[in-house]
Image 1 (cartoon, helix red, strand yellow):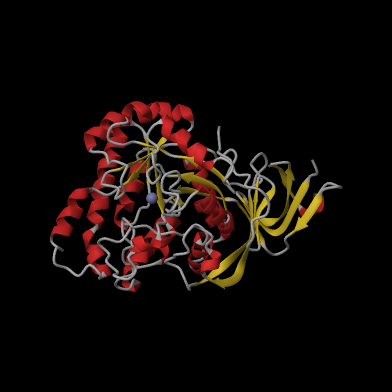
Image 2 (spheres, rainbow, N blue to C red):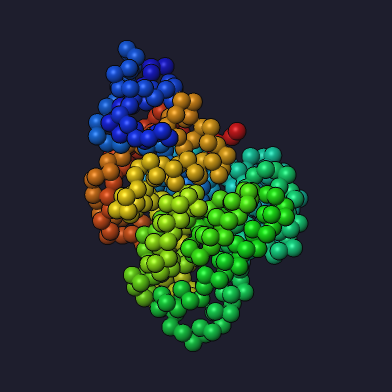
Length: 449
Ligand SMILES: [Zn+2]
């Protein structure tokens, strides 16, 4: 196999951003060396001023396949991922049918994925009301951790867990050593708030925001931290939307609890003040909160209390967004962003003084660590898979339907001018995206440790 050498003046490594040559032997990175130390005979590709980032890892998205492939699907999601600079996806267990709550369902997902993926993938299992006995079997079969909901997930085929049901599962989860990922909102504060809004205008974004108060997240996180302390399991808070939990999360970590935290591009980009009434494209749960809240989430990233940024790419058929009526009570909640998450984050992060090194930490290293494959994914380093993204940080573009590549070209970001263009994506040394096209056969496969 010919040695490949990827050169750039801005290679984003864990040690920093520097001019370098990435030497790739077959599917893996052999070494990262100064550009003048490329061995003779290597096939050189010099990307000049374009940066080379590690392939991004999305630890939170909904592929909806099998069972709801008309919402998304492995072909379209992995295509959008490649175009967006992602080379590894970890699929949530709830939006496919059957939900990934036992080994047979995991096998059904593997069947659906076979031969159809343009990037690598892995699966989260679940903790639902009645699958406590399946938890360890799922771990043995290869899931990377377990997702659960403390509130109704808003989708058929997946059940929430009550505290007693969760307690019954936690000893099993703890034994696997895998993380428990939790949608942290409790129903109580939401039901109270929603009851008081019975006659409110549900086209108004303020109404929707009021219906899901910070308190729902805060009370859930408090419960989870106490369970984490009691059962000594790994805990991961998905899509943190309120800054108000940051101090308690920081304190939990200082105490030695194994807690990690994620937020999403939409919480860091949009703010409630700017969302128009009837803008169902911006509906998600927990909701996008105030401008001040957004800035404090950025501070949480700066301080390291928030470890990572995942997309929570959660698409649906356009009709479910109810764009004509703009009813924020009944429209599907979920924001699709897989192909534009990197430029969204870079646009907002660079404006706040962050670097591509921060982006790589939040969007590649952090998620890889959560899902337990940091030895192979998420870094440009010897021994890792040669998953690389060629990225032009200074080039601007406007979000148009042609740039989205997922099943339904619907986006909360449509028409926005963003900074940073993905020129090419390499998966294990092979080009899977370049200048708007997807060369070659789908070579993505499930990550198996
Ligand atoms: Zn989600």
